[in-house]
Image 1: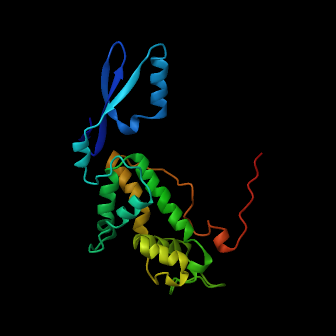
Image 2: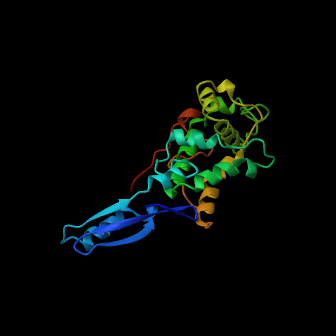
Image 3: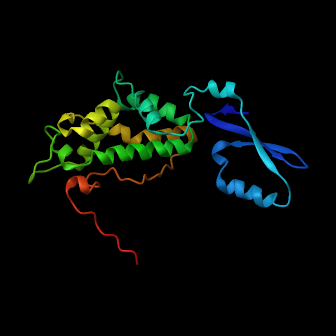
Length: 225
């Protein structure tokens, strides 16, 4: 049975053995390490566990996707929640932050992974040359930060725009940026946990020049000693 308390999902886990017991914990706490501890504790008995689910409560979840793993489709659905009618960037991203905070920590981290991968895909010379006033020009100053924020704007515009730009760099929006997108996962984490220690690093770096191939450069060789 699931209970929604402070935006967290709890489960009633029953230990099925000669002496039955049940206890409540957050689903995010149902980790491999926890299950291993149960195996050790009940290794000498025919013990199992059951998790009770109340479909009605799950259906009442605002996102209706609490049990789905974050994937690209859900990522783009969240991006569509950006409220461009608002004046400040914090207000624009607020609906996305709120929706993401209702999901698991794993989903928040996966959102960051997908975002980083999209930004990495757009990190290349052909896109940098299409920025408008701040475009890359050989021998002149080029802002690596602005290029990152410009790539954020492409992703923030949604799936269709992202795909169009990815396949045709000339469609790169001119003189447009949206740095706030970088902080959605962090703000969702803070809203969900009440903590400010977010330190998740995605596997792909979204920093400018990270995509060596797209910049026509050779990736540095890593020496393992």
